[in-house]
Amino acid sequence: MSKCKPYRVLMVCMGNICRSPTAEGVLRHRLEAAGLAESVQVDSAGTHSYHIGNPPDERSQAHARRRGYELSGLRARRVCDEDFSAFDLILAMDEDNLEWLLAECPPAERGRVRKLVAYARGAHDGAVPDPYYGGKADFERVLDLVEDACDGLVEHLTRTLGRA
Image 1: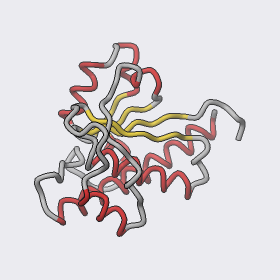
Image 2 (image 1 turned 90 degrees about the horizontal axis):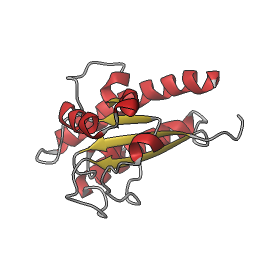
Image 3 (image 1 turned 180 degrees about the horizontal axis):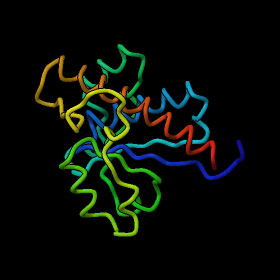
Image 4 (image 1 turned 30 degrees about the vertical axis):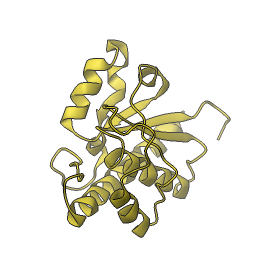
């Protein structure tokens, strides 16, 4: 592959401590396995500034680690205006965060914004639900949905970048 500017993907949830860092870690792992790590950069951010600078939630880290994903080096940040032009694809975890992103996004960049589950290959409820106030099963459900959607996203990126 040529040394072109990498394709950039931003994962977004509310606080950037559970769902979006999980999605960032899963997608990075899947891209590495697909040989696309050099061609695609991944980041995550939140629509709110509750946890800026904090690592992912300990429960998210523990569940992810059991499946082979390391999230400990990630730090929460808030979506900034520059993200809308800097990223090729901005993926919200749910409808609320999608609406926030679309309200903040310049009209010319709105085509870059969608929900992560748009790439899911299996059944889903239209969102990656927030596990923050839930238990172990909720964190496992997030991982199941994120893995499925990231597998579909990697297939999409393989086709897209193969044509570039």
